[in-house]
Length: 147
Length: 92
Image (tube, rainbow over all chains, first blue to last red):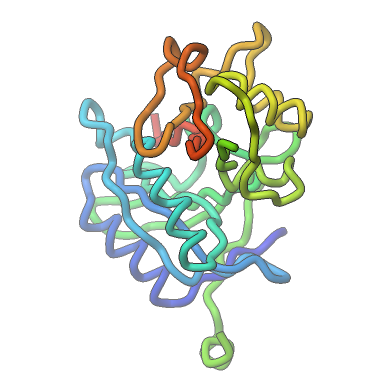
């Protein structure tokens, strides 16, 4: 299984954002470096533009995506993927998630149940257009000093 | 020449090239020329009728260039196009 490893702060920031978004779904971008595994060093939250059904879906505007790509280039970071929450629902991809999924991006899904983090998972699209799970890890303390 | 910025998820199909320079005369042709240069990207950008997919948005600078305008919007040499995949999802 491929690995996606977070700094503790980056994972904390994802969880804090998605708890504060509850009961709406929250979303954001993952940045870092691709070395022997994907390293998430920074996350940036973005507005869920889905105003009709934000408890069940999210949407990111085109201009926010343009800015996200620029941010990666300007800061010499790899743009690694997208995170979003499933509120009162498991951290597994839906058909809706699959329709919009892109190759080579990691998709973090966080289950937020009654306002608390229940599970965090990561998924990547296979060549046969199915989701494959990645392992979500945090850096060990001694690894952080070498970043 | 105008520049087309390639979104990160599709750079696998452009040998990690971040942008593509073109002397195409319109927005639509710029995207066509990109796909001609990197054929593996074709299926992500165009549908079976040769039209740009609904899930793909094209921005000219910071402005969204809608479907009707793509074929007639003329490019000038310093223009910058961004290919934007629609990003959405959720539990339902």
